[in-house]
Length: 305
Ligand SMILES: NC(=O)c1ccc[n+]([C@@H]2O[C@H](COP(=O)([O-])OP(=O)(O)OC[C@H]3O[C@@H](n4cnc5c(N)ncnc54)[C@H](OP(=O)(O)O)[C@@H]3O)[C@@H](O)[C@H]2O)c1
Image (cartoon, rainbow, N blue to C red; front, side, top):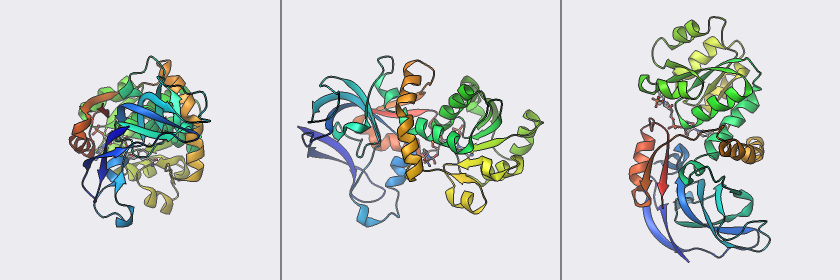
């Protein structure tokens, strides 16, 4: 079976190429991809200035589709099953052979673009909550609450009984409100605006942006730096006693893997929404990445096959 796939032969560039998809070996399945989930890590992985020994690079960590072939000892999967898969390598493809342990049944209620975009943001949000130890009635601040990780966080925080104030641009305040947060506009004067909304202070802060403003305001408002976590400014966080998490950290990786089925169940039941802003034909991956790189995609993006 042939597939087209996107590959970066050099940093800052993506090309469409053809390859023979290997038949699934023991513990593997082949998926006919219907939707590719898109995340900022995709363009960061091929940004100019990387280590040339990593080239060529295939990107894409999450997909949804239909099982086309099943290898020996690949569990209960069957040809024709609708599935999602995370964390895979080279998801920007029409067809991919992946380890069966990364593959989960897609809830029938979840369309392919949403399913393909559920797990990277969702497991990241769950991991941030793990390291902070959120309690019921905690008052928390979420930077980047209108983004993919931000809206997942708002929903998980609401389920945990916490109250969230979420930063967003003025045009995305409605997104924060929709997912249970109180919106506040980022930019100059942010700390005072948050104080006005939470006169008794905030107990913890979740940074999905990584700007100095987000970390400065968090340090100003949260009494204990260890109750601040970032996913986008790890070096500064570690220097100043805040927490940082990344999918490659062994502890985070194990925890995130343990959360996948829970998040799929929540999404299948309609308790965790994945807001897909735009879909693009598979051939328009470069254009879709430009929208994502803008920093204001307005929701999740997916490539459709
Ligand atoms: N460490 C990890 O494990 C991990 C995992 C996932 C993601 N990440 C990183 O986390 C970040 C967010 O990912 P995502 O998928 O949620 O991104 P996204 O969907 O593109 O969202 C970006 C968010 O940033 C906000 N924003 C943009 N410019 C801003 C500024 N100057 N000040 C304040 N907010 C600003 C946007 O708000 P408006 O649109 O309202 O302007 C939006 O809420 C990315 O850097 C990503 O690489 C890290």
